[in-house]
Image (tube, rainbow, N blue to C red; front, top):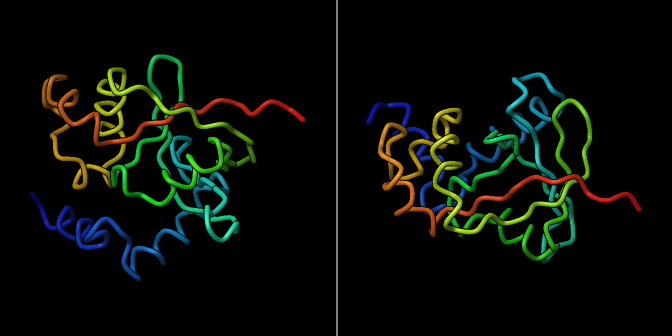
Length: 158
């Protein structure tokens, strides 16, 4: 493990972003949402399950076999996961343009290859997921129940 991994883990100690992480997430969400970064980076907007306010944060869009996916690097305890579930998967994805989407949870038995792809393209997620990106698929199958994955689908027009 290198210094960068240790730094990233400290930002999310206890599964929650500290003050520095929250600031970095706000800046990243603006940049990613505007499409300034690569196409796999974006910003996700979800409605808070308690407050009802829109919450925006940076995400990595994982491509796999023609689909697009979001992975919760912090596992089941991530607020965005609980907010998405509470709002029937409704969200807004920003990555140079605004896209209303539905996030559909991927069954555990189908998550492993998506998790493996996520670790290939998301260096910031690597310190938080307890496998190495070069590990065999069986290791990803072992951790799949603990790491929510959502398929991104367009939301039907009103």
